[in-house]
Image 1 (cartoon, rainbow, N blue to C red):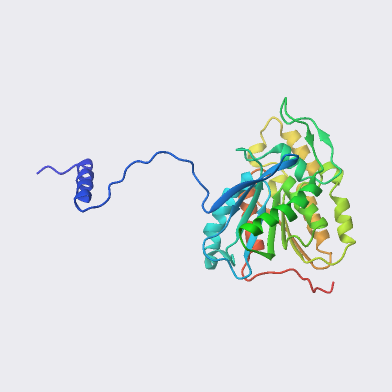
Image 2: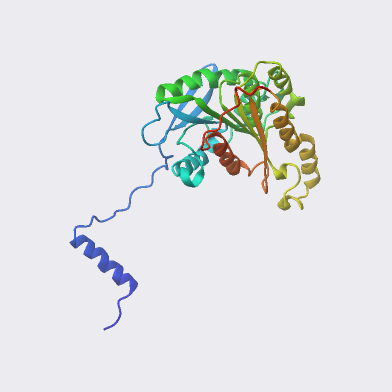
Length: 321
């Protein structure tokens, strides 16, 4: 007897399945992929900037105190990665060290792109701000300096909407931002230190507009004790060119930009400066092998481990320093 081909075996197996009552699989029409357990809605409009919010809530019943929350800036770019970190790591605390499941609030803009340059330039940058040429020919001028209004949105309208949709633990709130987003994290810390318990600023643009952030930091240092845990992150190749960049024709311009912005040194110095404020626990970490643009997955991992570690780490509100 000649041996059956693989195709014949598969055909017989399929037929046997039909005889045994196994449902036959049929091809389904293509459809949009969805983010597990996430909903999306817009806030704003009319005379107010429109922001697109993605809310992810873990499965199961919320803790008695409500869900801890990770709030993300540049939500269009980060929400998928953040959800996967929560699903993969927080669900297995003995392997990840993450102490609890947590909700995610990603603040983005009504676009399919990863970033909205106009929106983030307006929202994440400290006042007074300036006007810049359009990103693209025919586009709108860039207006900066809207961080105060955006902070008001985050701490009032947005938080109220999230609390309407799910129970949250106000004592376990983390804010994460990268680049301009990291700049906003530091601005928000200085101006509303009680709004979040954990603050993570990755590659913050502290240099922006002649260090306009620093006046807020000065005022913060003169203010009362704050209960805040702060993590500043930077990529190693924000201080030098990455190997793949060293033969680029514009390598000298790139290197000059890295030196002028000084992201690594400024972030490290800011962590040290904030650590002297009563009640603030401030840490700096350098992420090796990464550039400003590809540091985000590691930075988000660091943020989650920092904000939701097991056992729970709190600020030193009663630190006598």
